[in-house]
Image 1 (spheres, rainbow, N blue to C red):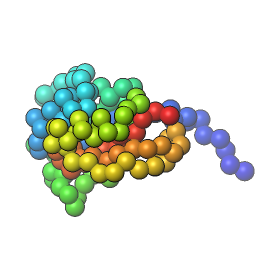
Image 2: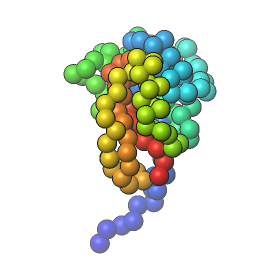
Image 3: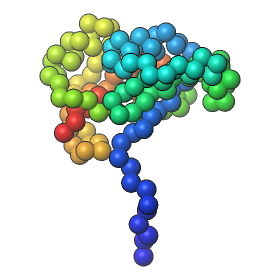
Image 4: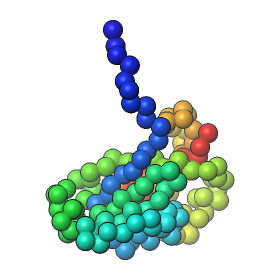
Length: 138
């Protein structure tokens, strides 16, 4: 007999990304993806950005907090495979044009399975090479 867990996950709360390119990361998440800064703790090397109901924490690798995670992220040594940001509905061509206008490489939209079931999404990369999936709420 399996016991029912008392934990009920509702959404992503936050994700922590380590960086050696703080300004590029902030430009990407603030300006391109419209995630405003919610809190900055420079003594920890931490910037927290609001992403809907969740947070994206960006930690500089040279900070005390960042050094706890080891060396800087690199293509073959990522600490995150990808993460998905649930978005409001969007026009695929308009989104692709917007991303390309900001020199963000795009691929094809594909049907993928996520927390709300199957839906079309696109993968992009942030300045540290982390893969970000953009998927509209169903």
